[in-house]
Length: 493
Image 1 (cartoon, helix red, strand yellow):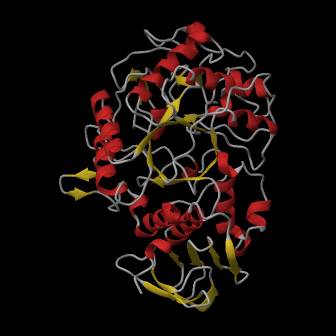
Image 2 (cartoon, rainbow, N blue to C red; image 1 turned 30 degrees about the vertical axis):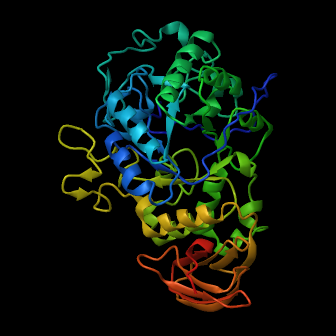
Image 3 (cartoon, one colour; image 1 turned 90 degrees about the vertical axis):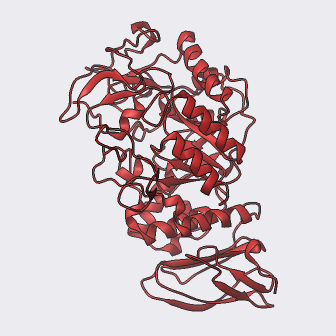
C-alpha cells in the first residue's frame, strides 16, 4: 500500500554503511542570523517581505519552497511541490522571471535566498490514484509525463529499480540498500550514482546559483549518498551554503559524519526533544546539563540547523510531532529559548493555517496561491497565512539572537525546578522565561552592566527593566511570557 501522505523524510534507521572516499568539506558557513521558511509563499510576496519586514527586522535569509516544475495533484496538497517533473522554474509561486526578480530584490536588501532542492527523486512512479488524490501526469509548466519517463530529461535508465521489495518501495528503514536505492513513498528514485543524472541535477543547481541563490536545503538527503550530493554540487561555480535534510531518531551515528563533509545537517533531535519537553516534562530540564541535552545525541553545533518545527513535523510526519503555531504562547516560548540558546544555526517556520495534514496553501477558485501582500492589506493572522515570523515575540527573539550570537556559552543559569528558567549570554544579554500558569515576581543575577533595558519581546514600545550595579534584575512577568534584554536595548541612562 502506498503512503503518499508521508513526508519526503524517511523514518529512523539503525545505522548506515560508510563510504570509502568522503568529499571535501564545504567552505561556506550558515547564515549568521536567522533563516525564515516562507512555506509556499509566492515569489512576489517574498520579494516584498524581504524589503518591508525581513531586512528591517534582522532576518538573514529565506528558505523558499521548491521552485522547479512539479506534479499537479488534484486538491493541490502541499506535497505536490516535492514531486518534480522538470527543472523549469515554473510553479504556483511564480515563473522564472518572478523567481529571478525575488532573488535580486532580496539580495539588494541583504537577504539570502536558500532553495529547497529535490535531488533524490522525481514525481510519483506509477500514477495510481489513492483515495481522493488524483495524479494528473501533468506538470505546472505543462509537461506531460509517465512512469519513469520525463520527456527531454530522464528515461527508464536514469532511475534505480531496486528489485528488493514487491513494488520497489522502501519497506525496511533499517536496510541501507533499500534506503538508498528503492523508492521513497513511491517516488521515482533517481540513479544519483550515475554521471548523467549528476550532470543534469548539477546543471539545475548551477542555474539557481547563477541567479544569485546563496544556499540549498537538500531534501531527503539521507536517501542519497554524500558523494553523490557532492558530485552534483561540483557543477556549481559559486560558493553556496548547503544544509541536508537528515533525521536520526535521537542518535549521532557514524554515517552522519560523511554528510558533514558536504554541508550542515538538519537537527531533528532538537525538534523532537522540544516537543517532548513541552508536552511531558518541565522547562527546568532545559538546563545546560539537563535531560533536554542528555536524552539524545546531537550534531555538533557548527554543523547543526535547529528549528522548533518545520513543514513536515508540524503535521506529525516523519517522527514525533512538533509543537506548532496552534500551541500559541507555548510555541512562542519555544522560539525564544531556541533563538537565545547557543546551539546551531536557526530557522523559523512561517506557516499557513491547516486542518488536515495534506492541505495545501490558501488558494482562490482558480487554484492560484493567494497573496500574503494582498490589495486589501497584509493577509497575516486572518485564518489563512499565519506569518509566525512577524509575531512580536518571535521577531524580538530574532533580534536578541543577532545581538548575542557571538557571546559564547550560557551564563547565570537559574530555574525554579519546574516551569521558570533564566539564563544569560555573558554581558551581551539575559532571558527570563515564565512557562507557568501564574504571574512571576523575583530578582535574578545577570552579567549585564548597570542600566535600563527595553524588553525585546514586548508587543509594542519599550517595556523597561532595570539592572542594578550588582547585575541584579528585578522583574514581574505574567504567565506564559518571557523577557529578553541585551546590550542593544540598553537606554542612555
